[in-house]
Amino acid sequence: MHSLPFTPDTAVTPFDVIIAGCGPTGAMLAAELRLHDLRVLVLEKETVPASAVRIVGLHIRSLELMAMRGLLDRLLTLGRRRPAGGFFAAIPQPAPEGLDSAYAYLLGIPQPVIVRVLAEHAIERGAQVQRGCAVVGLTQDGAGVTVELAGGEQLRSRYLVGCDGARSTVRKLLGVGFPGEPSRTETLMGEMEVGVSQEEIAATVTGGRATHQRFWLRPVGPGTYSVVVPAAGVRDRAEPPTLEDFRQQLRSIAGTDFGVHSPRWMSRFGDATRLAERYRVGRVLLAGDAAHIHPPIGGQGLNLGVQDAFNLGWKLAAQVRGWAPEPLLDTYQAERHPVAADVLDNTRAQQELQSTEPGPQAVRRLLTELMEFDVVNRHLIEKITAVAIRYDFGDGPDLLGRRLPDIDVEQGHLYSLLHRGRGLLLDRTGRLTVGGWADRVDHLADPTAALDVPCALLRPDGHVAWIGDDQQDLEDHLARWFGDKRVVASAATAR
Image (cartoon, rainbow, N blue to C red):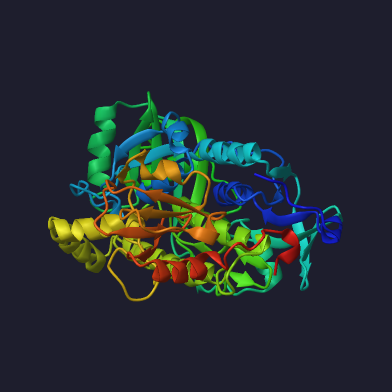
């Protein structure tokens, strides 16, 4: 990669992008931007990384994205695989056979670990991360954004992205609406040791779950369990629960507190469901929990944010580098807002199925029966794992707008060719060329590629942007997604 050329404006705007928040979304976005050599600063208000060892799950689509950037092998050594089934409303249905992915499993991994790996990845790529820096103000103009920190310091960048969580300061400063529903129920979650046998736990939990779906104890290590139990009422989520809170609620639900002690971490979560009205206001954008929140059921939250980062990163980089087609950056909201709305809807549905009321329980029993049909089970699993997403790229074959799995190619596997975050023309005819787009799009002529169409143009996020075998048609779509031919990439030409 080459560094950005110095221009008079770089003295005034030392950063191309400032990211507020160094969680999974912010760290992933920083790394994606650095693939295109942008000057990136990540501001994190916390002085040290969170220490709560909460286990999160990376679903199939997120695992595919990690493979595209060469990160998956590193993460696999730090997590634990489990089958890709039983996600929807925790209905115990096994994963459907033949899921179309080389990564058809869930990777359970401690959240601090994935945050650390992604942050290290961003730093290795050249991003700057500053901790103890809280954003308290922002102003923007036609050339960039001025960011004010709590200590009074002001920083300047071309763009700002708020990845600063559910209570996003950036979103509030923008005045972007966050409509939805407030929490109606609250749940305690933590990891702690227990003082009774596994057999006693299994027998008691089985009986308790007959009337309380939001109750379980699951082993996560020798003598240590993940404990989830309904809370008595909604309180300030900023106030952490105590071990006595867990004991009281366990006794209320199960008649015993299982002798819980020595907690690793404890938290509470509600079922608030909200979606930002806009993902972009001028030169400021939102991603991750700053743009959407929902109950954690189905384990989609972290995945949704990381996938936002993959969608946004190359588009924002193209804008800064000066070759983005006019509407490209706006496709971030056009594509990701509906995806988030769908996630909110499926978590609303799952949350209803957790209710102990007779009506929702009847629906749960009916859905459990329906999930015996492979087509129903497959539809719900593909929805939660995000492999069913199809962006609207216009009329065309069903593959258009979908992600391409990690198929076999002459050089091994497709995703190994996407590590640099560039587009890719997968050409089975050997007759096409990317010509003047070679600085942004790679070309693989491979008649043996395991592909049912003659040629496919992939965006940097792995979604199929074009299918066909005509050179002129290809060039029209190259221009649509990757701008004009042979535009010299320069920060001075950024819009």
